[in-house]
Image (cartoon, rainbow over all chains, first blue to last red; front, side, top):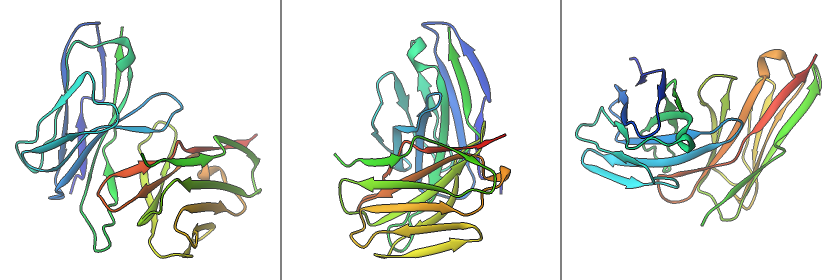
Length: 115
Length: 110
């Protein structure tokens, strides 16, 4: 199993451009998440999904959109990129455990710079 | 809303010294998880604590979950250079979302 894969690894955008960050998992996990991590900071949840066709906002959803048409894929769309969106973006997936436990498996991240 | 406070933000230690990071939640947790992020890497799951008062060990790492299920700690004995990174706690209430602490960065002094 490849686990959680993300593309691209690095990207530089100009202000106002748009892009899609790709995320795929092959563990048949129902739950998927997008986080951003600013330099030296913790993780902030952008969007999450509990299954195909179901998405919901996290802590910092403004400026982003997601879709979940399949169990495997959970792309994150940035519209009208702004310098404040310069960050490292992590995708994660999880499978609910017996006690509601929900270990998350992370992809390697996408390092995005908006200039 | 629920918050998980993690302290300290940074800890500088000499190699061989101990390291401890603490997490406190504003609400009772169903479980708490610990992750490690190496510099330039992604968070990697270390362990999960579910029971009140639970203590788990992984070699030199000791994890504790408080009796009230509101606090937790990670203690590393005799740190090594391979321990360098940021340690995050993440608490879960009854739903599927994890609430992340801000992380404690372990720095080994040269």
